[in-house]
Image (cartoon, rainbow, N blue to C red; front, side, top):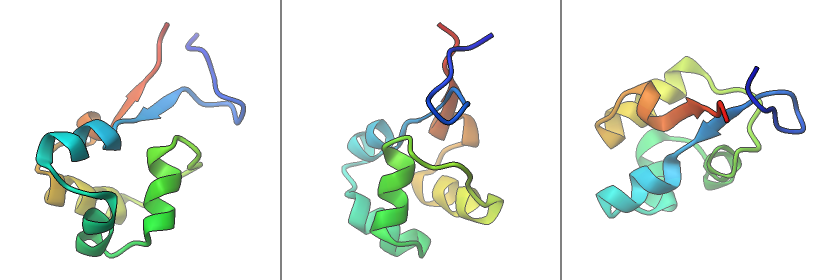
Length: 76
């Protein structure tokens, strides 16, 4: 069973790495996706409890990636 965070999940967000690889800021991504910087920051810092599929779709479209590039499950 994967190690869990305080809120009971082991899902890790990789927005930092994706943004760095694309030379994009969190603010720029938030504007393009149509969500607040605060909400993306919560996601980026692994404090989010959920994400809407529509938001995940827009993130993937703007970052040119798949959901598995944005998230992984920690298994160590």
